[in-house]
Image (cartoon, rainbow, N blue to C red; front, side):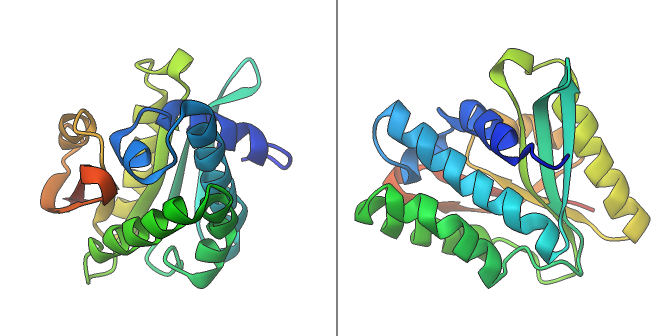
Length: 192
């Protein structure tokens, strides 16, 4: 990600995740409020990722970010207090109920991580206007190649049932699941 692109990439994530079952279950009702919530949460993580050892890769169309991935190698701190603090304003500006749901969801997300060292793929999305064009596939492939270079498995999670077959096509296998607030299912996936 280039300097000055964080807000654009955060908006791209918000557009991509606006109807994702996990974000719908945890975030506020109403698309405009949910878009702001997702943008703030993702913007917080984008700000903190490099500070805790993460990597942000961006695909661009006509110079504008159209897809992005955030991943963390084993020595990084993706579950750090810094990321929680960076994301907190997004959750609490959405209201106390959303703040509580966000904390519950965060605990469920953290619980799925394997005990062994792994590369964690945290955020992967393409803007809706650029989905199904290979951008996400290229970015996820780059993250998987980094995991292979490091000799560790890759781990990710999703609350979108349509994503599970997509991730299986990369060799990810389900290791468990959990229920997010308001009934969304969260799948934990690992690629050895």
